[in-house]
Image (tube, rainbow, N blue to C red; front, side, top):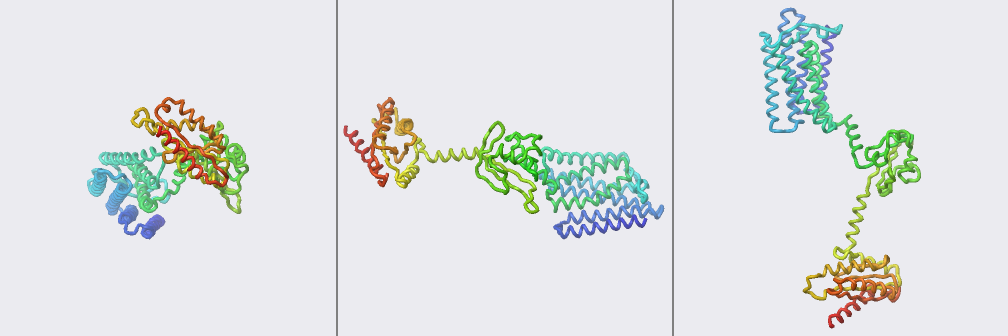
Length: 501
């Protein structure tokens, strides 16, 4: 008896210590936490008094029943407060939130009223004196509920409500295939315990009271974890593994012995890894077969662009991050490769860069590219160099067959098809500039081919005039811009002659 109640006093003391520490660590001012913790303490006291009063004989039986009613009623209130907090803080807010809270409050009030009304009438359930724990040598007598038909019906509906509400939480988590935080685990555990409690209540009421007492002590701890310790903890591992497997980057991990130990789905698909490669493929062979680094790196590093080879000789341009994690004076713990495929990114950048270098209408190089080319020719004193300045004019301005843009497009296509790979063609302020790294004679032969190609086009022959001026750089020190200006002058002279005819 002394040992039994000493244990109760120690348990109550621990609850007060937990209450004090909870108030110090963030729960100060939280009325719900204080209420739940104080109710839990009173429940434990009523549990002990239930056993104590039975030692007073028949007079103590009624008091034990009263303590049992207090025990059950306070538990329902504590559970109601916990459920209300859960709905208000973690459940998705809907127009039915207040309705659910009202239903919970109604059930709690109904249960508390029945508990006290039943002491005299025993209409809903009867009472039985039994051992606190039949399987324990230190067991004491305790008064427990023996449910009747009406109370079993009530327990059935409450259990159904708990099951449905808990099932919604479980379904949401299963559909997501990932537990977001620890509060979801606690909520699921609470609902499972509640279901077990009611099942036990129907079959073994003496065990039910003991389970209820344990759950009462745990409930404030659950509440504190929900509100003030909502951190992933052990859930970090599942979250990290899901992100590791679903990311578009390729991760390949080697252990301290430089043997393959893990890889994500993207790496498996690209490199063709199988489970047979685990602890068999070493880092040296991985580098020789897939990532051309030459030798096994001894330090962490990054590479902006590297060609990586996958299965079926597939090649991709990747950004490589290699990390070698060490401990105890550079003893390797593990190393991993993070490969990010940038092939599409580079292709998009190249296309964008190419688009910025060309003229939208003619497809020839843009004016700013011509400026850079002029600076390059002058800087490196390239010689010989010749220049052609070309113009395109419509013979009949009222012609509906062709307009300026169409004429420029046709002429530009002819120029691109006839110039050499070393020649340079640009569009500048309505004029086409051609640069030839050649003598005047060679440049003249290229221009003859261009003029012939334009004359062979029936549309060009009847609707436009194509004229050009050709000049060559006199010395390596002559500014190429002066040669371009000279070619412009010769072109304008030809245009005047054409107009005077």
